[in-house]
Image (cartoon, rainbow, N blue to C red; front, side, top):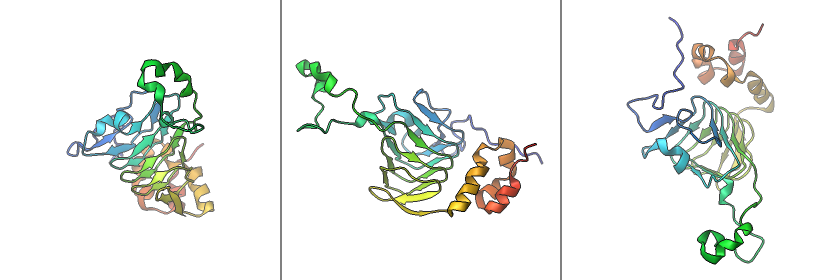
Amino acid sequence: MSAVPADPTVVHPMPEQPRLVLLKPLITSPLIEVGEFSYYDDPDDPTAFETRNVLYHYGPERLVIGKFCALGEGVRFIMNGANHRMDGPSTFPFPIMGGSWAEHFDLITGLPGRGDTVVGNDVWLGYRSVVMPGVRIGHGAVIASGSVVVDDVPDYGIVGGNPARLIRTRYSDEDVARLLALAWWDWPAEHITGHVRTIMSGSITGLEAAAPVHE
């Protein structure tokens, strides 16, 4: 029997579950990039992810999400546009209220930012977790439900809490290096299809044995 890959271009890969959507076919903003098969699950209009889950995205910083990521209900990405001045007595953004206050718009432009927010491949973001601006989350990481991620997360790290702290890593440093070298998420779709069981439940040694042979 031939190994037929799943289709990364459909919005609803499970038609009977409209709450689950693949994000790549939905994204329209040039400032958001999502890899194939990364999905978002939400019973309340998951197709509005760009506006309901990516907040204060006034640019130019980008949100980059890798392939094969699982985003639970209510995951939010806070972007740099949420920043306020903190070097004076008040943090209130008076100029956006209009009137003569708008003459002071220079006070809220050019605020320092933390750069792009980047989520690696094969990352699981739990229910109502929040990712703050400029955070980088490594490949294979797990973000516990309700976490507020304010600092970078290492590859295959598990973090939780507010602010999120490293609970443990899923593998040793040596095994993480082996997994990163394999980068199974970049394998051809047909090859992934033929080795789903190994990718989901096999050993790293088994994954190495399953890797495509490059001539």
